[in-house]
Image (cartoon, rainbow, N blue to C red):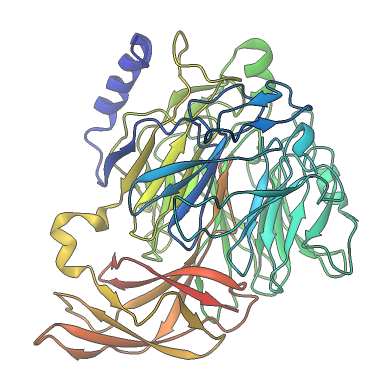
Length: 544
């Protein structure tokens, strides 16, 4: 039986025809038709592997664990003896994957990558609600490198919480269902929890303050957006520094309303910072969809606010199409934000989304007001609840997931569980831009950077019309539930390019690393040379 029902196929055709005349570009490619699990959570590591997982109480997946490596969990709500995988390691360079053995339930959990490159994965559901799971950066795809777990590593249960890396390398874990507080990991002098009344104040009957949008501001405080409001928070003293205006339409933007958000690109010595919040579902949408099967049109608006202003205000813009459950990805140009996945109606939750949005949109923050959105080429795969998207080092965006059902379900439903992986290639990867695409020349990887210090970056490129290139640095994000935790892009200060177009078109640029760990928390980043809007393939750098 076809995995796409007739009504869905008809909808896809109509959507394609509706958008066929739109400007813009980009292209899609299928990487894996079936990885065996749904990509509810994704994180790129500095060995060019993406760690992907869904949840353990889903019943058997379509990916078997290695022989004799079954999972035994007397507390699991679906299978106490399970010989299928619910996590995998995807190797980008070989387009291959291997199963991993995750033990406790990761449903609706959160994560941060530590400064040394390990994935610290926290919380979840049932027996995973206080778990801390650690995944190292494996050196060989076929080794036994796997998860290790502490089932009581957190002080309280964390379900739908947000993790953010701090300048000292710790993660702060904010909120979660019925948790109006925060804690740190790893534990040190503050092993418990601290209250945060703002989280209880933003709770509504639908709990539209889950997975709050949290960013480390350039002043060292945290910008926290929950429901429709935001604060600037000093986590060191547990005090609110500033209360921001309510977003103008007052509609909720966090889960289950599930808009998305990014911290816009920062300069390496930034004293200003802006946050963008886009899409979501109007207030009441979750209850209307879940109780009455009424699927309200999603929001079309984006709000943008300069969080460092003394009297900040929201600037509202309108997207080309309504979108809920979208994902926002900072592209390495430093001038583009990709908005991808999602639906035009309904809300997050099992089977509560309608009218998939197949065409991504690029938002250009520095473009003229009213002309910042460019619609891109559509995919043919609906990506609804539990979809994900992450930037790869080669400039593509890896897209996976969409599982609007409680169990793996491939037939007799409007939107089947989706087990494929796709890549979206932005316009800068077009073949006719290849002469502008630089190749960074390094003597080792990763490069070690020091805060505030200049470094020389060599590169080769066929066509260099201007010697004013841009160097950007991107922290890989943890993608889940329409929010990419720890996503951060810095535009590094650089001097004019030196070199010659003959005989090998070899050049060098002197760039300055970010000034402090407040601007760029310690860890691994992807570094790019951008030539006339076309980024090179990135190289890994490490800063601490």
